[in-house]
Length: 563
Image 1: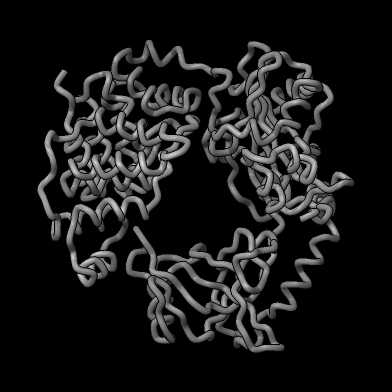
Image 2 (image 1 turned 90 degrees about the vertical axis):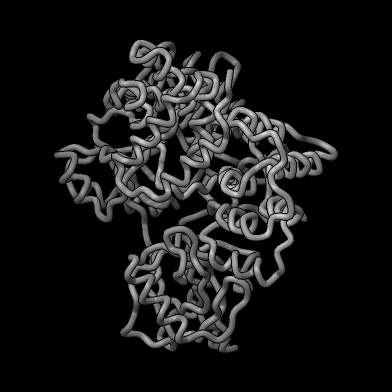
């Protein structure tokens, strides 16, 4: 077989970056897919959108930017001034590498030219390097890979490593391109991807077997599905207006979304991002084996860290436990986890994703055994809905979910059938610094450092950063405003006079060792500029500390650590 050169994929990336219309992007992708040999399809599809392995695959490259830069520095002899100029101009690391190699490469690329399959297999080697000497091995493989790459090929190798393609193609567009290239219905391609969770496999089957092969797509135990997602709503009225007279409300738990697969004594647990976190949750696995009545099941739920009285504790405490690989037994005692279930996708041979929510809930009740279900209520009035939301907040949870009783389960889709209504608080804070943005925000100061003043010292204490909440026009205007207030720069950070007050929405205040304030805002986003407020009227650090402590009127606390 004459393998497809990796240069073809890099050229595709360049053309995609220069194309804006969705139909033209899809056509470019489809033409690329049709020209591939069957054995190249899975790797080529994933690499072209910045993936090496399927999302559920536990392998990862684990290559740092420092390792990439060190490898590129060996290939180029650019003076420091040229490097600084390039890194200031480039929109991302991949583009910076291309510019460096075009301007200051010592030697031409080593033969032979790279192929798509060869790049994939080298990435497999990098991911499989483990144990003593693995870092050196990864760096050697990376240097050899980049030494054979042209500047444009190197650009896309780095983009794949950083999973940051920036060419406008997302998963949905790739699915459309697969359907166009194979001449099959887009709905059958999307459905297969929901079940298989691998664009590469979907493309291979679509292009080699067509609609007949895609019809065989079904749920597979121990192949996690992307979770169904919810849209955001502000008030309970929205749910009642959208779903009719009767709405299912559930507590929105402040934990980690988990998908559980069980067959007899075999249990695997997957995170929201489809990572296997089974080893971090041995106590949950044991509970499932002992209490779940269904012999086979795929369940959707939430793992919540709790105190000795079963009350939920802050999310950051759970993260000290979640995905942990060492000292799991000790952490299990220190940070107990309570599992709550709220959906079932498969039970004892029957797939339920197409069944309405009401039917799935009944099936869940029949399968759950002695495991806990999320607190739930069917409501018919606004008063009932508000009372349930207050109860959720009073029990220490972050809000409620509203669900359409007739809705199917749509993996990976943020549809209109589920709504999330979070308890949201706000503060008036001061911007004290901002960072230059990347990609779409290139050329704008965007990642804003938010601070509260300590009246006792006059110091502004940072509580976190956010680039969320502003429009493009507001980013431009804010950039001009902050540059006029510039005090100094350090790397890509511009420090400014504390004069701009913004209202910041957030969900929780948590402890932080990263900031001198000792506190950080969770899910911070700018709601509006407070032109009507001076910095003297903004919230103080004492206010933040008071709000933090007040949270525990509803939440629990873990016992102090022995260390």
